[in-house]
Length: 160
Image 1 (cartoon, rainbow, N blue to C red):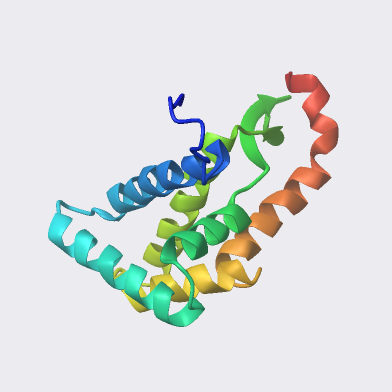
Image 2 (image 1 turned 180 degrees about the vertical axis):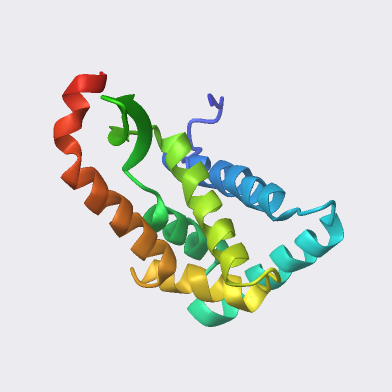
């Protein structure tokens, strides 16, 4: 952005301007994934409570803790099923950053729904805080996907 005043000093780089966009984008992606059977008020209250609990537990801005958790959970490769020789083979293929964050959100929601049908802000906060420190079920899911991808990496050449 050009300014006529030459004494103006830009406080933030363009990189920092991108982060609020990411918060808005992935916050809404997460919010839309939480909406189950049209419970918008419930999902909104859950997100508000989640922000408050992340602020209390990590003592930093909830945006940063949420972003760090998503970055730690986001997979580098995903397994795609392909048929070869009458059997199903799981082929590891790299994914775009947009899909990485989408799958991170999907994994968190799926993990929460598998444990119990009731998703609470405390349990969701537990999963996110564990993901920040590279522990918990979301990181185990990522490691298992990467282990299978490492075993099947020789199959990539057949499916390019």
